[in-house]
Image (cartoon, rainbow, N blue to C red; front, side, top):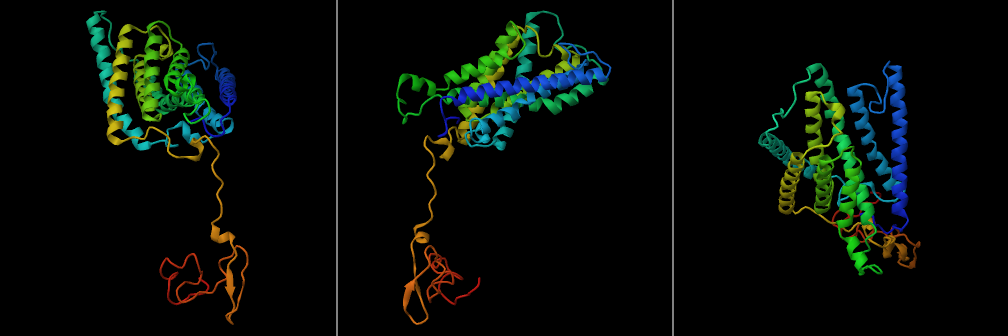
Length: 372
């Protein structure tokens, strides 16, 4: 999708550096603004709490991550000089119906994921509660409002940046089979989704502040969503599961009052098994539905999707050739170059003359209607 006819070898690294710098600059600006807001509100910001309070910190983190969406849109349009819609899917747009279907699939898959975690915890005999005690409505409800409002933007931003922008950036180096040196082993390898999936999954994992089993958990999710994005030709499925999964995870943390530790920790092997089960179930269901619906997986014949500039549109030949004009006395004289409005209507054509005379009344045969 990113290898348009405007592609040059230096565009992907330039786009990547520009995106990273803009993301870092945005985070620094927002961090400074958050610290100032905390000080003005009588709170003390710290490295772990930029706004000095649990719920404002949660909102700040989600907003910072959500800013990746406009940044990668800007870089795709200005630096790569291509349509932003190409980040959504091979159709060049968000396939909203398919997105809704994937959301419906994600809900029972999430229930299965939580069920697997619960069963594994019981089988482990640790004696710990699956969910901690309720923190209280005065803390839970404001946090829930922030989660429902901002998590969809945070989760979708990570998909746009990593499964959209980054994967396409890597894939743009794969020469087409018809291009020069397109048949080389390196070109054939780069045309496969393998490298893009691995790079996207690795970066997604490293951007999370986890260690131990939790890193493996995130890696499984990231690689699965990258593969699914390639297979379905769009981000809709990955966005759906990511949003639903994060809504559940943040809501459970808010319920038990552990939002401060929601994005950190070492995880457990039970979590890895649960996430692997979730990924397998969701990918299997989505693949079956995509096949039944005949979902488009490759880009249609779009001028921006080919390896050569689009041909310039030319005016029709009948506009460019001079047409003879009949005067009232029957003599023929040259017409004005490029004009087809000089021939008065005859018995078998309308007032506008050829080439519109064959479309039936009032432009076909019959009485002329000058001035229409």
